[in-house]
Image (cartoon, rainbow, N blue to C red; front, side, top):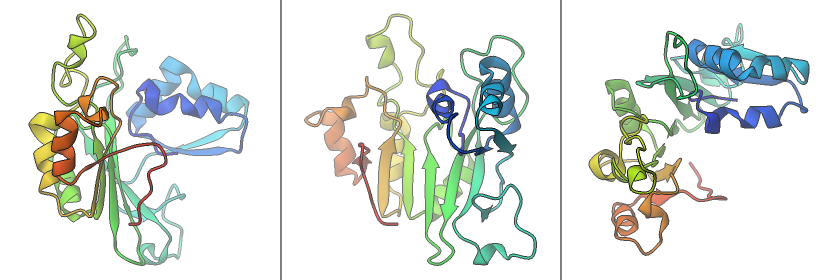
Length: 225
């Protein structure tokens, strides 16, 4: 399991997996601290299936190993992965002192047989050089499509936070142009909020996304990297 942050919609699924096999979870120290202290996740998992927690690597190494296996070259392993540190805040339910460290990451995967790469970045509060490099070199990109515009949530919920306050760049003001220029063969929006007009198939916003060659993610979507 690869956690990008400690938001509820990213971690609650782990509670549902408690009665299965032991879990290996990759999460930054700050994220692990948050879900342990605020949600009791580690206690729940250890009562049932058990879980091993590991800091995600910042350089490629084999998926499924907390550390690169001894005597085995990374290039000869199976699927490789690495984390990309992003700006981010603790979730709203963290009321006490916030854990120190990286609160949000993206993940990049590489198939060493083909050299092709996939970037998964569902929570992007701001661009940084490492993320931009990953965008430039990836063959497929799954990117934060939470909001079309900064104030859209406030239009349906009085006093709601802006996209920026919730830790998301918007499609209109950032990622539409960014992904339009990307060389990736597959460019897909995910993590789409139900206020986002790109979900409406006949909307102007949906047409703008599709005209840029970007797919609005949907359940069951498959593609070949």
